[in-house]
Length: 203
Image: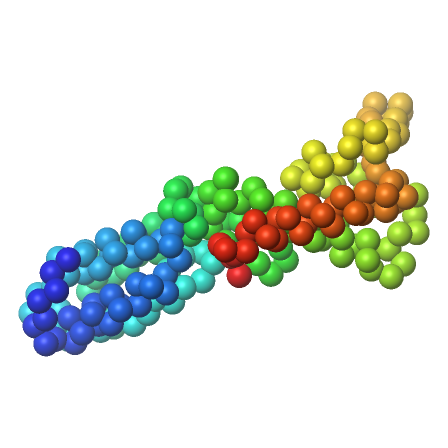
């Protein structure tokens, strides 16, 4: 990156953005540094008065606020947004938008998403079990409605089958009493997931 300063507002903006690199999620830092290189590459007297502010970081990418209607700078800004929107914010590999919970999202690759989706599913299941009056019917949920990350951790012998011969369908479900038996196992797994993901938590 060219660190020579020309004293312009544009250069000052690039410098300020560079100082914020440490606040960028690790998986997005390479793209962010490339973004700064691209900005320095298009620096010229005509753009001296342009200013940029940011980075604005959310769970779907990085956004930069900029003044002026410069098509080149706008293109560089859009490149950063589109690149981070498809890059895992934890490891830098290819990723996509993931809904970890009702109000928690992130851009993650399959490998980074798997344990977090499992944890989100476990949390939701445990919260449902703890809700007053939740465990009153003959079952908590069917196989089809249970998050697919959770299905393998429910023992095979816990599932029951109900056949609908008229519609030629079979429904698998778990009795609430069986889930209560499995609660220590679910709590233990949730605790271990929390410990393993503590260092790279996606908040």
